[in-house]
Length: 261
Image (cartoon, rainbow, N blue to C red; front, side, top):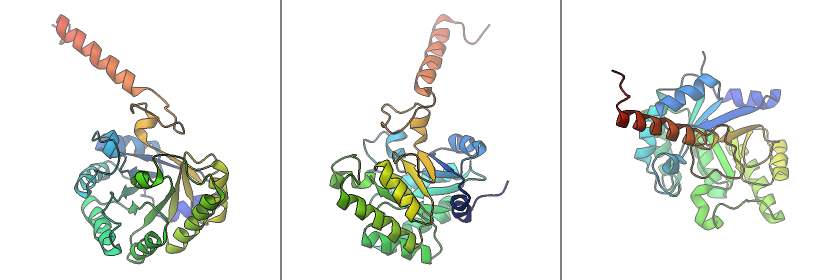
């Protein structure tokens, strides 16, 4: 089973083949996603909330990301593995971004990194990394690390100036060498326009059906999250299933029914 490369993503867009991406933060989940045929597995900074119990992505450290990315890497054989660069591990200067991305590639074996934002300094940082051999997944629209600046987790690109800015950011990130773009929580019409304008694939999350692929947080898909965003879909309710299984175990132990005599 050959591992995927960045060439797979541009080819998929050319062929009209929808791309599928999900998040993972542990070995067992990574194994399952990889076996299911996922194109891209993201060790997302959402693990700060789903796995570590924080209320936002901001507290996540590079060391914590390395720890989780290493576990995920051991479970992945085929999928293209990307890790988020945590807040304040890449925004100070482009050399800092290079060191952070380099550690994730050397110590965790990821295939690429994801950076949030498409403003001029970030575009320069993306180009700086790509020129040094690091595949970069761009991310525009709702960028959770900037939630305080954005006024929370509201939809982006609703006004004409915002929409034009996002369209230009997408083009600039493509020019900088990003191999794909995450489009998060923006109007479906805008996401469709961006997907049409850029030559690299787009992965939508809360961005409508016309992106080149879709990405979700796996905890949301499995019904493990306490609260699921309105643009996500729970395909099962593992939170309830696990609760019922543990409760059944508790009852059997307390009644002396487990282990059987």
